[in-house]
Image 1 (cartoon, rainbow, N blue to C red):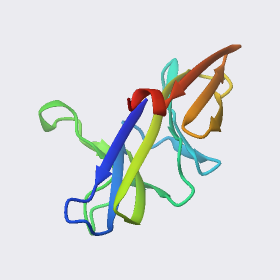
Image 2 (cartoon, one colour; image 1 turned 90 degrees about the horizontal axis):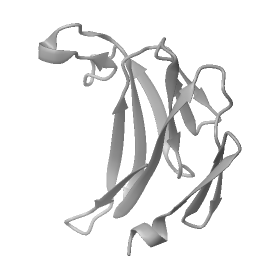
Image 3 (tube, rainbow, N blue to C red; image 1 turned 120 degrees about the horizontal axis):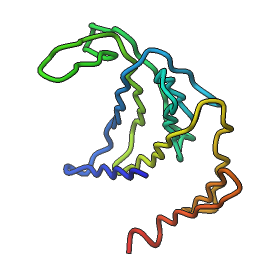
Length: 139
């Protein structure tokens, strides 16, 4: 679980962006909320947006202009190859919290079911229930 809180220092509204880089171009968007990255291994990764009513989510691969998005750079700049960059964007906010769940998932398994009750998220997966309560975390 990742919580990125961005706050304006000058008191003005800004555009905020959170980027997630994958190692693969085998990605797909599910319900405009989940990006599924097929890593070609036993486990894949789901990057799940927990708040996205106003967010714009875009996937980029091999982009060079107006800036570089969608490249994987291995150690010591070796093994550079096209990969997907996930860009989450929100505009005109003085403060914003990007709430993200990065979830490893075995190939062929069902995605987790997530319900939201204010700032409390209930994640159901493999007959188990996990609760993340942001109000408790922010105390």
